[in-house]
Length: 612
Picture 1 (cartoon, rainbow, N blue to C red):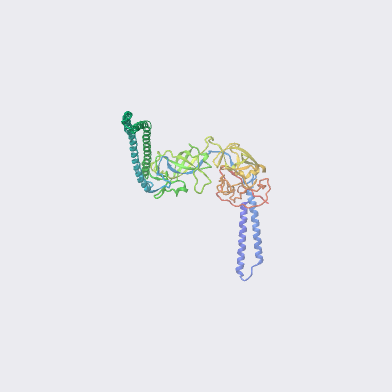
Picture 2 (tube, rainbow, N blue to C red):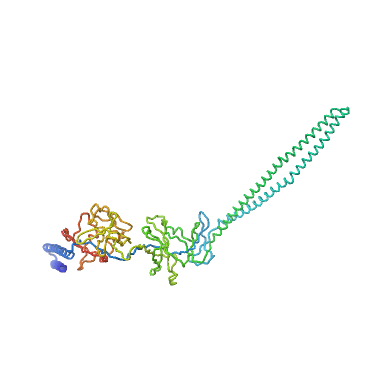
């Protein structure tokens, strides 16, 4: 039939060309004669007839070629359930670094930082003790000189306080052993003299009394001798009292005073020693800080600048001369080339799958044909800091070892350097999964009320099959229960849920996808969310199809019809035509790109166009 239609088409085209040729000849022979209205009318009628005949023949041929007599709805793509090897890998980026880095830091304590005056070029191979960095020490040099003067003053103060303490002790000894006994003896001598004078005065008074009685002296002389006696008695009492005060009061007072002087001297000496210690410690601190201004290599190695991996901070923290180095900032690393590893960044959507001890493969951009094996050594519990602009997705740092580097040839081994970009593939496959599990594409599943289903369609009968799902790698899903090998399930099950679910059931349906399910939008039978988005979860291409799920050209080399069931979901209530369904309209097929191929193992049913 197709061959007949092609011949008829060629015949009609030939006739049209003949008519146009005759009209041109008539116009050339009769230039001044107006064209015949009858010829124009006949040409128009002939053109309309040709279009109608061509459309009818094409529609009949199209229907005969793509008609399906098996009872299966047209346009539905099937996937055969089969067993296979389930591989689940997390792919991320990273950078090569040394597992043993000797970090050279700026140890100068400064709130405002210190400027780098000179730094050794990156990549230089240095020996132990070689100068790596010189920092600006001009401000600290002046402080160090002033501190030396302060320490000298405090040392002098310590010596003076020590001398004062010794003087105070000697003063006490002087009083106890010299001053007090001397004063005591002087008073005692005064008492003895007063007693002797009083004795003579008493004898003179008694003798004067005898003379007065005999009339040799006057009363006035007696009174004078009596006053002299009383005066000497008072002097004796005064001397005795002075001796008593010296022993009981003055001595105790002077002892307390001299003791207090000793205590004060001792306190002043302790204070001077303490201040001297503080100032000496400060001087030693400044001397140590001055030593930090010249940084030397603690061991031999190759110089690598400690430029941050974060691109937001790379410009701010670039290591160069004239840069202000912060306290404790890492300036240089001396890596150990014998122990290398890769620091990778894992997206938060996959970090829960990555565990310590999982195997990984590493590919370096500098060596794309060389694959290195490794093991996950560390996974951080907290995400890396965001840049100044922030980030919606968090990333977690993980460390991957690079094993068997010693067995590599020297030319390859020497090419592995810190900072090389690396591509990581971490095998996060669940070890509890059997070797050959039952696998289906993620597009063959949908979720409803917490349960997962596949859709089958045998001889026009639609049905849903509840399954128990296992692990997924976002391309395939392990089926634990519900399906057997060899069954056929519908690709793009989300688009056909209106065939197996009631309107009420569809309200709780969700599309199966990466990181969980996505709520269906657009109402029952309407387009699902994310449909037709390039690179959307579920591995759809730009038309909402699974990769490789497009149809091959029909037998006979005819054009592919539009796939209404896979390209555009029908609105609510619209039925997909099958063998037992009425055909309502006539449409002409539009060719699809030739590179669209059905998935391996999948069956493609040709679309039957509806008829009016």
